[in-house]
Length: 112
Image: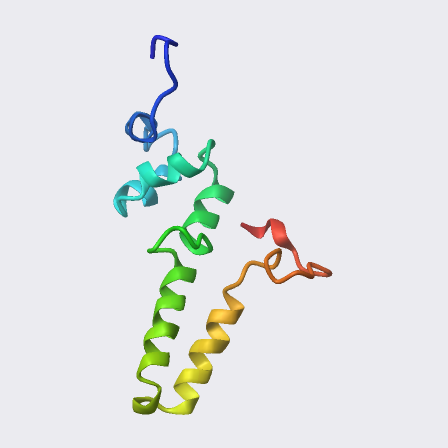
């Protein structure tokens, strides 16, 4: 880079070396490197895990997939058991990051 302009997310993603940056591997394999770097400035375990597990703007994050499953179950609620719907709701609720739930008393929020 010649210093004339900041690199785009795509340029930064292409510059990652998987040997020196092992946390780039899951992003590259899942096709999420560019959107990740457009959102985060630093490649770190904490940022990658937060993006791939909790990020609501990442449609393929675990949290977003659980939300989509819950919404799908809601639309066919008469066709599934109440236990299945309750379990989906319970798992979705448990997938909320502690800081989003409000109270973080006794919860280790730096795990991701």
